[in-house]
Length: 121
Ligand SMILES: [Zn+2]
Image (cartoon, rainbow, N blue to C red):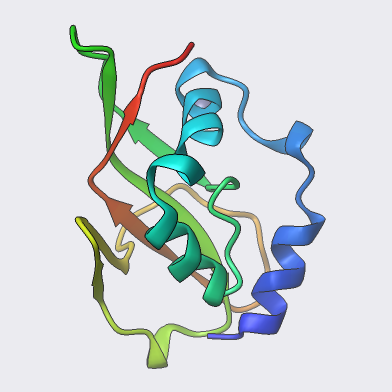
């Protein structure tokens, strides 16, 4: 994986390019404060946790929380030196299936799961 390229990739994404559905908006608002260790871990890989490529939400539950089956992030480079990790309560692994990214350079996707957040929408 190429951490420098990944970093500049995330810097170029503007927040108005991100998905504006309620599930993703909720994720953007809550993820950093709820998962500081994961935030730090992804940051060390060059990934901005507030800019997922895709989130897979369930419905908010009665206690005011919502679970995401996973969230996927683009990483630049090739996955050869990437190792599956457990970060706190979250698994971080390579995403085997994902929507097409329209990026031509070498890249792959990782997914983090499960994620449970307060529903603030
Ligand atoms: Zn969305």
